Length: 107
Image (tube, rainbow, N blue to C red; front, side, top):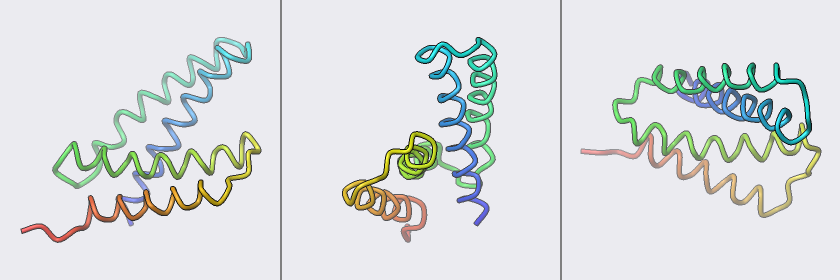
């Protein structure tokens, strides 16, 4: 449970921080948005190090799957782009991949 919470927190920090920078550069919001977003992105770099998994590569590979799912949800909730069937199928494939990467029995 802790692992998934950290993945979600890292994903929200990356997406949220990137979104604030996006708003500054693409939608002419004040520079404070970009500065805040940049600081949040620094936190994103720190959060995955709190994972108990020993392998950097596996943690980031699994995080990539979680990031994709969070991005679909972000697009739906923030950008008001309703995910279609293929978005949901892709998200399920990502969850399966994350589960295999993190919890497959290894000898």
